[in-house]
Image (cartoon, rainbow, N blue to C red; front, side, top):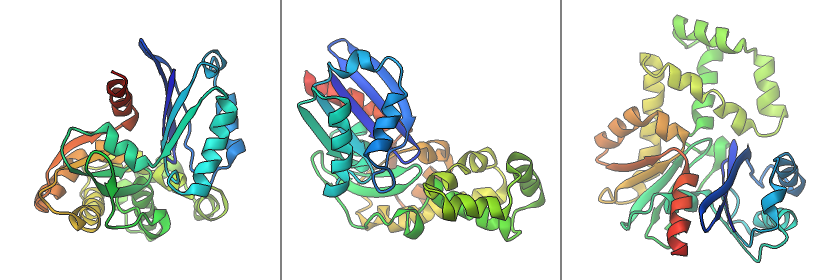
Length: 281
């Protein structure tokens, strides 16, 4: 059996496949070795009922996630996976952007990007990723990510810039105080996940002119910084919930910049299952 794992900072998708297709799948909290250690990964798996029925049958693992190209960080993931699945003879650990690339691969050279909790983009030729801009994370970069937009929303809220109707809706939804926000952002782990948790509110109110402009500005920035570092002739493939739920506005901003978005996939794991099924044929 083959285990395919695709993790963002918020959510991690696990799919076990066999000769008959998908045998078992489940979801855990997101894994990012910049913030999570080996014990965290093992604890996530301990909470999955029925996993022990399949764990010993897994002989091959393909893991994709943030931090997976950094040797020291990838070893955290590999070590945990070896303990959880002792009969796995082959464990590949690759980046979350490679998951995006393989899950949307259609035989053409493309610019592939992630717009989820975090954000990044590169050129993919079917085998390797070529970067022009580095991934700077949610503090310095991640333009148009869930964390980026959450930060813009909270800034506007605390500066008193939200329209009255949006502010009222925000208060009714979250009842947020500055102290609570600071506790989650500056004192607790995974501040990027906390910031991204406000993305559903933005999507819910995306027809409001203030929120729409906030989204347009972020998407335009992502395209300008990351996508246009490559030639406009390449189509753009995107994965992630921010890209999925903001697709209409995102496509308009891409069109203004002369960029053609030909694929948006919310869940890379679905495309990865299809990709590796083809590899086994």
